[in-house]
Structures are given as structure tokens and as C-alpha cells.
Image (cartoon, rainbow, N blue to C red; front, side, top):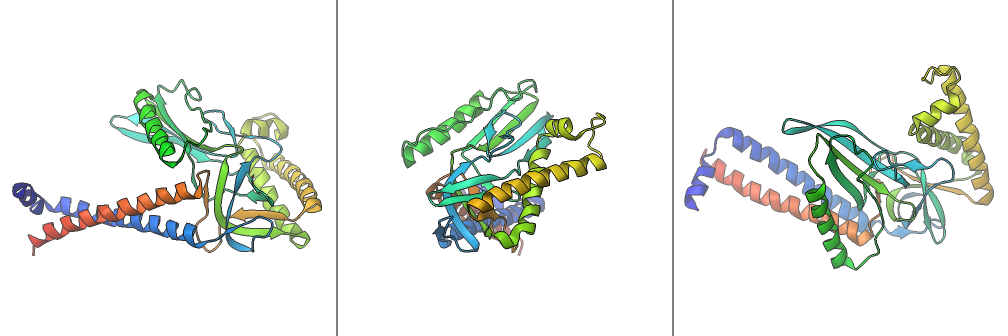
Amino acid sequence: MSGWLDRLAHAPDPFLYFVCVLAVVVLYVGFSGLRRVRHIEDVPTARVRSAPQGYVELVGHAHSLDGEPIVAPLSNTTCCWYRYRVERRSGKDWSVVESGSSDGIFILRDATGDCVIDPEHAEVTSRHTRSWSDDGSGRGGHAVHMRLPSLGRTADTIVDIGGAVLETLGSGVGQYRYSEAVILDGDPLYAIGEFHTLGAGDHASSLNELTGAVLREWKQHPHTLRERFDGNRDGLIDGDEWEKARAAAQREASADLARSQRREPLHTLRKPADGRYFLLSNLQEFALLRRYRWRMRLGFAAFLVLGATLVLMLSTRL
């Protein structure tokens, strides 16, 4: 043991610099987990109908809006939200070929009403996450997302870990690696963000916001967008055709807004302008807290180990 510690204490300077940088990184990871834990614990849960304007926590279920569905590009799963990444092997390294996430709006519904979720710039944690690899020919053939009934906290944790291990062992080896996460229609949904209720006096601003959301959703399906608005059939949406698409999106948003305002005020949740966290998850609150607590603990524990290593290495240089 003493020989190993002596070799560590006299490690070359590049290793010292590496340990120093790594210590800063894990300290940041620990504090990021702590900040998220504090946010989740400190912000009280509100109901959609009675939620105050501003930064709130909502708990309900995710539901898709009527209209063109949101479809995850790798698994062809119809969902409320998705994130995906495609990587290609280059020797021993992997490079990202393609990645993205959906920014189409969907609904959080609780017992008191509906809230429109705009997921743009949200930090999303999903339990429906799949990874696999192949030669590039099986795109969409592996990822199957489904909801399983809860067996209790301990059993759910064992199932999650076991499923991840089996996926890793059975994913195969290939030139391409895929990963995809989704939030399914009907999933439990936990959200913290900026809550705003749009009334009649907000018509102009809410119409612009919904028009932008409709256009972002259409852009997720470029083939359908070209079929509807590519008048000269050149395979591109030029300036005039884009203006037609914008006008059509505004008409659709205006109709949706009118229907919503006849029924009740339109509630929305989005990223706070002041930079506070915008969190979305289909995990229960206790499960999300558990993840962030483990991030916090592992980050701080790793920092203590690396800090002790730095002290040992610096003591031989002073």
C-alpha cells in the first residue's frame, strides 16, 4: 500500500493537472445535483387551476394534443416528447452523426385542468430510455418503449438496473450506436417551470407563441411540410412558401386559441426567463429526487477522494 501511495504522490505533472480538472468537474456534478434537490424540495406542488403565476411545480399526466402526432425518429414510437442520438464508430471512438429532441407542445393534465407544456430548453429525465447498436440497417427495429406496472420502489430499481444490463449485453456490436428517450402519452409527468395563464388580454402574445409552437412541430415532419406547402415541387420550402406555411400555422393556432379561451383560460409552462431550472420527468417525484441525490453524493464523494489525492501529490512538490 505504501509503495502504491508513493508512486501516486510522485506521479508526473500531467496526471496532477488531470486530477485537478477532474476534481472540479465532479464538484460541479455534486453541486448541480444539490441545487436540483433543493429546487424540487423547496417549490411546493400546485394545482393547474389554482397555480400562482410564476415559478411552480406541477404533477399530473402527459397527454398529446390533437393533430399531427409526435413520432420518435428511431423507434417510430408515437409519444409526447423524444430525444435521440446516432453515433458512428471511428476506430475506438464514437462521433455523433445526428441528434435532436422534439419541441412540439403537449399537455400536463391533473384533476383540476390542463397546462400546455412547451419543452424547448427543458432538462428532461425519462425512464423510457433505450440504447442499441448495429450496422446501420436496423434503424427503428430495436427500441421498444413501454410502460410497466410499478412493483414498488425496490423492485422498480432492480428492474431498471437489470434491464439496462440486459440491454447492454444484448445490444450487439456495430458501426452505429443509437439512443432514444421518450415521454409516452399517459405517462406520469413531473414539471417545474414558469407558469403563465393566458387570458383574453394576452391574445396577441399567446397567438404568436402558439404559432411558433405549431411551426416547430411541423418542422419535425419535413416530408409532410413539403407535401403541404412546396407548390413548385422542387423539394424545398422557399420564402413565399414559408410565408404560406406561417399563415396556415397562425390560422390553426388562432382556432386552437379561440377554442381554449371559450372553454377556460390557457395555462402554459415553459423555461423561466431568469435562468432557473425547467425540469420535466415521467419519474415520480421521489424517484427523481433519488437520482439527483445519488448524483450529489457521488459527486461530493469523488471530490473528497480526488481532493485527498491532490493533497498527497502537492505535499511532495512543496
